[in-house]
Image 1 (cartoon, one colour):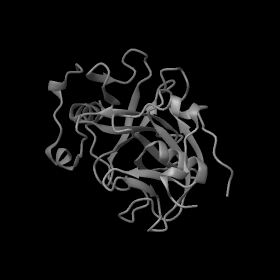
Image 2 (image 1 turned 90 degrees about the horizontal axis):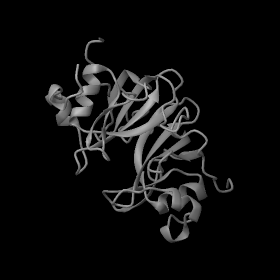
Image 3 (image 1 turned 180 degrees about the vertical axis):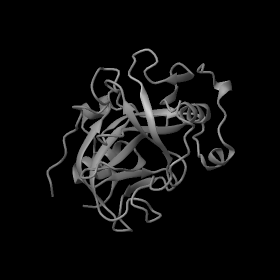
Image 4 (image 1 turned 30 degrees about the vertical axis):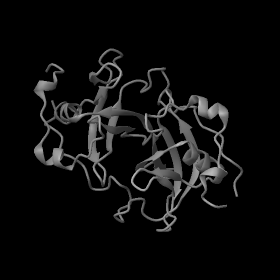
Length: 123
Length: 123
């Protein structure tokens, strides 16, 4: 199936619950379905969500390239989608995925791996 | 310590790594440090991140009220922060927290609880 926005149309009930930002996007969090690790955050528009639901492959909107982007299309590090949930106010998506290989473009397991900030002294 | 933006200043090294959006905000994901559940997503500006790091209490920027907002300040459902990480490109924050009570304003354990969308047929 080609990755063509024309191919995917979002269900009207889901569309009515989505609260997109002024650019027509919502943040989408990808979480490892097995370990629970938060892998990455990317952006979805209506077509990306429709494609993700239809294909069960994590698919996002690239803000820099202004195109649909199937995670792993070039790297092979795809995301098989186990579940998709929309939050209470419809402006955030949570994907639970089976991540193939590292999720981060740096080669790290997640985009947050080893990137902790220093907390203040415990009060 | 009062929740006063003037009180909290972000470390210069952290500021230099942050890539905020045009509104000066970054999405912040809160994850339960014990169970790994993704609890909610909210927004932080520099002051919210500085306050979170300094106080170890999950603190966000309310876009509707245009003010700093300490999670649980009115509900009691506070977030004690175990760790904070900035992602690979500096535009998303991941908090691991000890959540008191339900994370969602609806009373649900998380903002995603019971809100799964229907996936297409597996290919």
